[in-house]
Length: 83
Image (tube, rainbow, N blue to C red; front, top):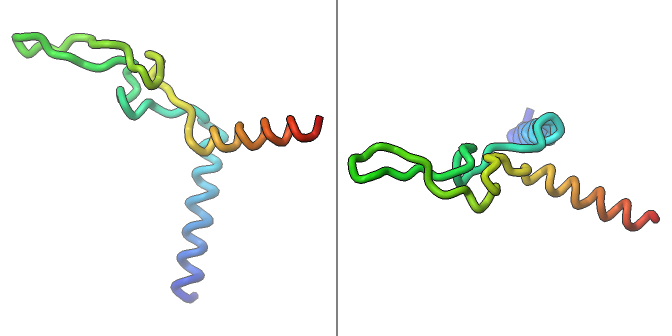
């Protein structure tokens, strides 16, 4: 098997793997707050305490995956075009 064919096969496997992951779990952890929903702050003694709510995920800790966002946008456009 040639190197180019192997690279294409690996790319296809990775792509279908990500599509499958977006289908099974459309929401992933927020990258800003690491899925906690808020930031961690420390007081003067160095003890951790809860900080402000995360602005990116609105304190849920979950964000929609990029692949699922693209699929939702394409499906919405298709439905709007066929009405």
